[in-house]
Amino acid sequence: MMFALADANKFYASCEKVFRPDLREKPVLVLSNNDGCCIAMSREAKRLGIKMGMPWFQIKQMQLPEQLHVFSSNYELYASMSNRMMALMEELAPRVEQYSIDEMFLDIRGIDSCMSYEEFGLQLRRHILSGTGLTIGVGMGPSKTLAKSAQWASKEWPQFKGVLALTLANPQRTAKLLSLQPVEELWGVGSRIAKKLNVMGITTALQLAQANTVFIRKNFSVVLERTVRELNGESCIALEEAPPTKQQIVCSRSFGERITTLEAMQQAVCQYAERAAEKLRGERQFCRHISVFVKSSPFAVNEPYYSNVSSETLLTPTQDTRDIIAAAQRALERVWRNGHRFAKAGIMLNDFSSTGVAQLNLFDEQAPRPHSQELMKVLDTINQTGLGQIWFAGRGTAPDWKMKREMLSPAYTTRWNDIPIARII
Image (cartoon, rainbow, N blue to C red):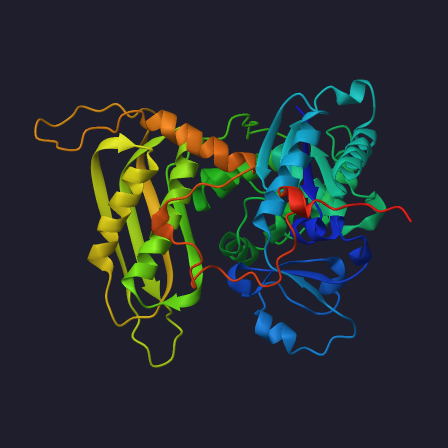
């Protein structure tokens, strides 16, 4: 078995640079929802001393030696670029597993019969660069964990040129890399486990690989034992070609302006219910349990903190947006309290089933809506084409609480009017 892990370098910041050649060597920063704090940055911005998670108001007060180019999170652009990158990877590998928005595992067994693993990694990098303008790092190994470690090293040391392969035929290279990798940088080892390992004298990935598996299982878990086995080249984590079905869908946002009226909160909950229902249909699932939560800011001075959640359980599973909005509004009425300035709200869908069929109650007055699936399919098709947008009137038209994205870049790949135009002079 042989895995490759391809990961885009500084993905959010790189997406912003692709369509802005003037920013290729400039410091770029991407902010979180409502332009709150730093969630991504280019290498140039990191060299300026900016830390991940720093609030934007603090960054603005820094005396920087050069201009910082700042963008609001453009999730539509990032999702579009991710889809393009993943499609290009699928062209070069028979089996793949998307791990995150910018990472994908590839099954590359047998590649070495026609080219070296490093040659394949370089070919993959060129393929992605020419198709998207994004640069990726590629790590390869006989297990997912070793591939992840190789990918970490390919970015850590420039002499690898973004590609590194660890093989069973060269155990010395693997041991050398693992001896240089801190245990907290390992895939699947969090900070809490790393601290406990450090107390035991295990500070590097190599020391963990050499640990007794029985001891690790007894003092930690079978999951960490599996990591030890993977570090020794034993593949314990298979490739998941089909992602597992979600057990919960959550849609929530912090508000750009505090909400103080029930009408404004109803609009927000309606919009979140729309998005959650669309995700539910994308999973081809039906739900019976809908929850709504609201909360004010715990950091507001001289303001009472309030947080609450309420749920509705339906007799018949549904994926109809109208049913979900109605249930969410009923739940909202039970948790709403006047006199608070709400900072965040959200909706959660639970209790999924793969079919909307259920035994109806004799006294149930709400029968399933006729032609529900056909109507929702038309709704989703129109909204996903990019040629138009249909929404429910309950969400309002231009709410004041809408998420702040004052430095949003154009939708270069998903809106006709924003497609870049090249002019030859």
